[in-house]
Amino acid sequence: MNRREFLQLSASVSALSAGGALPLLAADAKRPNRPKRRRPRKPAAFAGRPNIFTEPAAIEPVTGHLPKFKPARSGTMNKNFTATYHLVASNGSAATSRNRISGSLTVTFKDAVCTVKEVRENRPAGIVDTKLHCTGDLNTAESWTLKSSVQGIADTKFTETGAWDGKQMTVKANSWTQKRTTSHPLISQWALLRLLASGKIKAKPLEFDMLDNSTLRPDQTLRYCGKIDVPVAGGKAKLDCYAQTGYGILPTHYLVDSAGRVQLITQETVNWALTKLT
Image (cartoon, rainbow, N blue to C red; front, side, top):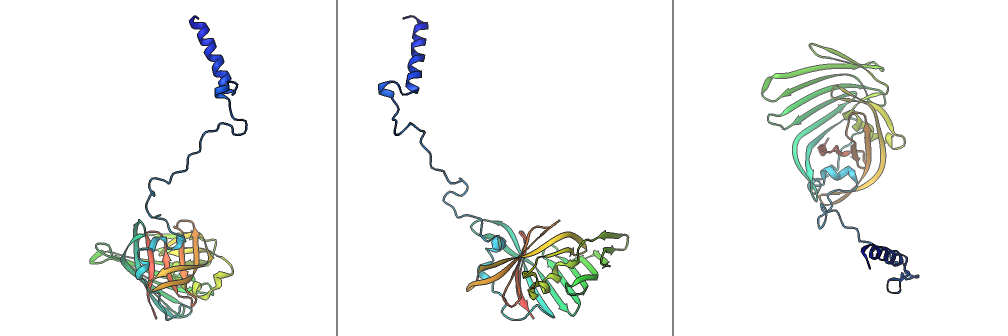
């Protein structure tokens, strides 16, 4: 047999084998030859390790802080109040988030005036003091003054004033004036606390433009997402969850108890945990 005949014979045998026509290689009519399926493997990053992601997402940034968090049990945010929060920073996640206290927030409502003091414990600390005059059922921003500084450095003091006429917000500093057109009610983030306490947003989502210090965050929506169980010191707390999404912000969750107290505010790296309410 020459080389050409050998190749032709080999090709014929291969074709018969593939079709199951040879006795020793015949395919089983009842159980056709099929490649074995391999069991899916777990991703290497999580094999044998706890899942770093937590449900619900509202508490994922503060799971490391929650075992020592004690929700406030007295006071109300429906009328006049002073609420003090820890700034709970999140520096990544493992089985739980890695948290540390790195500042404070104090929000005081007295009638139509909301005053806010925020301290971020950098080195040195940054301080922002805001006085806001609100109006109407939605506590919309009428006028405000914002003073920012860095602790111990006199040259860093900076003051802005602002006002909203229902259609346009105007912000002024010593050397400039800025005007921004709004399309929704203008509400400060911290004025939302009283709205959340009222329960009004449960029935219908709130669409608004947010005043974030003196910055406009347009086209925001705050909606009710249902109740969740939150593990806290001594057990679990069942809290109403509200989610805020919109232009220029990270998704923000507000966790509110049955008395209207906003216990937790989570926003990825910067979060707030209520420590005192009077």
